Length: 272
Length: 310
Image: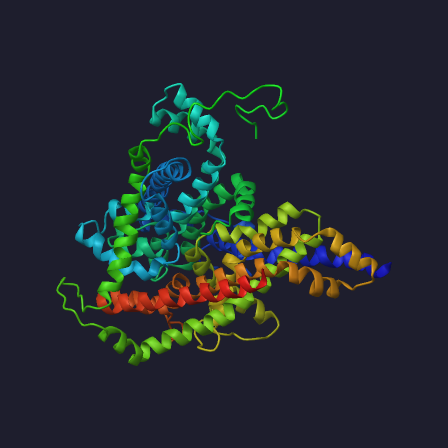
C-alpha cells in the first residue's frame, strides 16, 4: 500500500518537473526581455523589481519589427483566406462532382505530398524570378497556396455530408455557386476553423521560403527578421524582446484554440 | 449530426419517393466540377508540378544565375558523389537523425505515458507540452542559442552552480549536433506526443485489467500489451520524425551557420548554399533530387514494415 501511494506521488511530480523544464525556455526569454540591459544572465535577470520596457522600445525603433509584423500578418492571413476558399472548392469537386480526369487529378495531388518542399526549392525560386515576383508579396504568398493537405482534409469532410442535401438544392433550382456558399461552406465551418488555425501557424512560423523570396529588409517576415537580428550585434535583451513579440500571435492562437488544435491533430494527423 | 431528408425510424411506413434521378443526383455537367477544381489545379500545375519536373530537368543542366544553361546529363550527380562537402553534409544529416529521432520519440512516448497515467490536470499538462510546437523553429533556435551560450548562457550559469563548465555547447563539434537535436526535439515533441497519446488511449482496457489480475507487473503490461498495440502508431511517428530530421535546416542556419567548421552542415544547408550562395542551380537541384529519393526510400521502408504487421 505504501508502495502504491508513493507511485501516486511520483508520477505527478515527474509530470510537473517535465512541464517546468518545457516552459522554462519561454520564461527565461521573457525574463531576459524585461531585464535591464546590463544583466543578461542568470541569476541577474531574475529580479522582477528591476523590470523595464527599454528593450522592447529599443528593438522596435532600431529594427524593422513593425514592418516584419505586417509582412507576417499579410503572409499568414491572405494565405488562410485563399487556401480555405480554393481547398474547399476543390474538396467539394473531388467529393461530390464527377468530371473527366478526376481520379488522375486526385492521385496527382496526393503524389505531391511525397515531394519534400526543399527538393523543389531551386526550380520554384527560378520560376518566381522568371515571373519577376522575387521580393514581392506575390512571390511570397501565391506559391504557398497550393496546399494538398488542405484539399484532402476538406474533401474528406465534405464527402461525409449527405448527398440528399445537394439533390434537394438542385431540385429547387439553386445555382452551383449558391449551393457552395450557402450549403457547403456553413456546414464545414468546424473543419475550416481547424484548418485555418493550422494554415495560419504554418505561414506565421515558416522560414525557408520567406528567407529565399524576401530579399530586402522591407520584405522580410518576422521569422527571417528575427534570424537576421541575431546575426547582427544586437544585445541579447533586445533579441529576446523581439522574440517575445514574435511569439505573441502564436500564443494567442494557442490560448484561444488549444482544444481545437490538439483534438484535430489526434483525429486527422495534420502536421506543420 | 442530424440526418437530413432521411427518416431513419420508419423506413417501411413511409414509402420513399421514386428517385427522379440516379444516385448521384441529376446528370452532372462535367464543367461544374472542373470550374470548382480549377483555381487549386492551376496553382498545383504552376507551383508544384512544374517545379517538380523542373527539378529533374535542372539537375541535368548547368543552369546558372544568368539563365544560361547547357545539358550536362549526369555530370552534376557524378560531381556530387565525389564532393567532400556532399559526404560531410550526408554524415552530418545522418548523425543528427540518429540523435534526434530516438530523443524525440522517447520524449514524446515518455510524456504520453505520463499523461495517460496521471489523470490530474491532464488537459493543462497536455497544453504545456504542446506549447513549443505552435512556435517557430527560428524562435526556438534563438532562445536555445542563448541558453547554450558559453559566457552568458542559462545552462552554463546553472552548471556553474555545481562547478561544471563552462561548456561551449554549440562551439564544439562533439556537442553541436546533440545540442541542436535537443532544441528541435523540445520544439516538436508535442505533436508526436498527441499522436502517441491517442494510440495509448485506444489500447483496450480489458486487456490491461486481465493482465493485472494475472499479476503482470507494470513493465510487463507495457512490454507485452501496450507496446504491440502501439506499434503502428509508433512507426508512423518514427517515420515522420525521420523525414523531418532529414530536412533539418532552420535551426542550424540560426544557431551555428553550419559550423563549427561545417560540423552542423546538413544536406538542406548544402542545397541552400549551392543555390543561393554559389548560384549553382543545376547542382543544387541534383541535391534536391537526392533528398527526394532519401525521403521516398524511408517512406517505402515504413510501408513494408507496417504492411507486414497487418
